[in-house]
Length: 218
Image (spheres, rainbow, N blue to C red):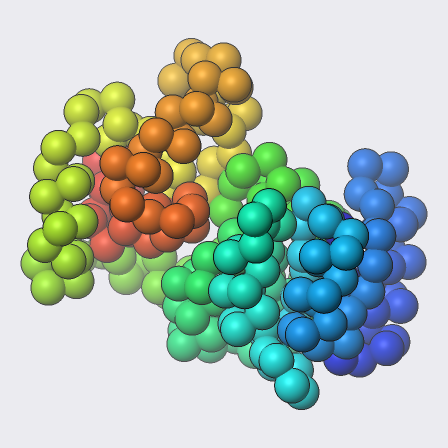
């Protein structure tokens, strides 16, 4: 994975923590979004951990450009800014999760493992408020574009359940257990679901699931 932060001490601490973990390897560091993009092209990391606000190219712009690469990495935001605007912008850009820098080390490691396995992490008070708000009220029609609403209506029962589980942040392995399917089958089904919904990644699918109120269907 690639660690992106404009503060040298933060990068040093993150690298020391993650390199001490058996199943995580840091292949490079970057001081801002532009450097992260260059490093991603050169090193092809599976995952990029990035700050949100940095001099030069910020984390939101970097996330969009990283996910536009031919073989895009997973992007996980790690920041000090706990705002609903920041969470929304990060998820709309395609980040697989949003985590705060005051998170315990074990939470960070767990979050990296979860997003690497295909899950979604929203570990901040602002993220929790956004998710709870979508659960507590039916989404008004204007929140979902008409074309996406039509695509939602065409989903069969299995696809709706799959979208609900993706929206809940479950990894492919966890979804496989819930739906009694092979993990490889789930991966293929998720890929088809993204195509059916015309979204770029599972994070955008999760936002759509929240907005559509599918998390209330348990």
